[in-house]
Amino acid sequence: MKLILALAVAASCVFRPGFSCAEDATSQLTGTWKPVSWLTRFDGGNTVEPFGPNPKGRLVLTPDSHWIIILNGFFIMAAAPASTRHTIIAMSEAARQSTKLFWAAIVVALLVNLHATRSTADPQTWRQEWPVTDFTKHTVALTDIRSGGPSKDGIPAIDSPRFEQLNAGGTGGWARNIVENEPVISLVIGGDARAYPVRILIWHEIVNDTVGGIPVVVTYCPLCNSGLVFKRSLDDRLFDFGTTGNLRNSDLVMYDWQTESWWQQFTGEAIVGALSGRSLRLVPSRMESLARFRQRFAGGKILVPTNPEARNYGQNPYVGYDAAGRRPLLYDGSLPEGIDPMERVVAVETAPGRHEAWALTLLRRERKIESGDLIITWEPGQSSALDSRSIVDGRDVGGVVVQKRIAGAVVDAPYDVTFAFAFHAFRNGSPIHGAARTGQTESK
Image: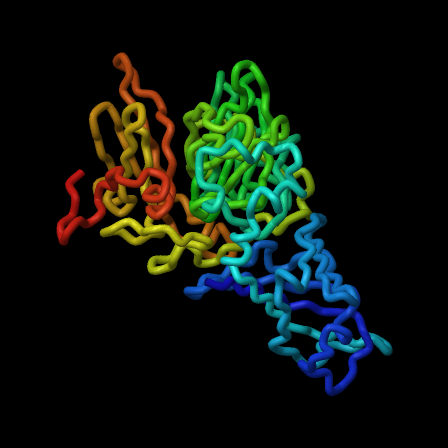
């Protein structure tokens, strides 16, 4: 399986007619280049723009054929020819002329053999970047962990979050950019209500925060559409989290700063390092529209970017990713039967160690499903963050609420609205209600 990274880059240089794809292309390309777009294309037709439609940074090709790439203020990679093959596949005419300087648009394809990437993703390679991590301790096969592309902290977590407070439900400042139907992860602890817009999380994936006096980590994995909140303390020890740049079953692998153990976002479990086998405690949260959050908490707080210019907030770098018939990115495991792998499902731990999921198509049809002490409801009005280029234009997938009856009261229960393939990968053998089995539709 091969991953094709197509980069459209422009450089300030003297344009030379007759520039060709000759064997001496490296010498002709040596220098510093300004990127105008970065498109990642996978086998099967899926494409994403991981740095948005207008990435800011520089690409440097050294005389010895090393690529050094810095985008949006972060070091992305230093690719050597021993691991990456560079092939020039096309070149446009000069785009514009400025005095004696010409801007040329070059399309460069980096063909990366993912099998080779995975074979080098072993402790011997990792130790250069992770000298503190104890790779002798792990609960999963290390070969199941693969690079997602970015390096350690290449997708930067938010560690000092900034918020704007609603005024009688109204937004002000930067939060006015967020439209009513946009999804947010909402959290309330001890009366402290906060919303974390997906338009921000899609670029950062992790927010270390303290809500109602409780240290938490808010997480979102776009490739699994998994939005979960955990307490970030164990045995009275506080942890801060960042991104490893790695994936397992297409899901974000996090790490803690204190021990540099690696954690699976989907499960909250440490899978590599000194804390292997430990689990973070899941905190009830909701994935809901901004409008719904404003109705519930007129004085709530909304996360805003530390630097609004650092990313294309509001833009979706994974255009069309959740369309029916698509295949998940960077995933080669088995797929669930009777349901599209990219269909959203509502995943709940219904009893200790027992996991169940309900297909969103089933919930949309029924509007309300009761199972034991669980009450699962759906309402329209929330856009998909993974559909259109602009999140606000995403199709309406609606919002889900999962609650549980406890001692005569109804309280929020932890849940996740994720993709069917991810639930199948991490909860293999657990039922997906509403998925067809041997030609029949499973009853609710």
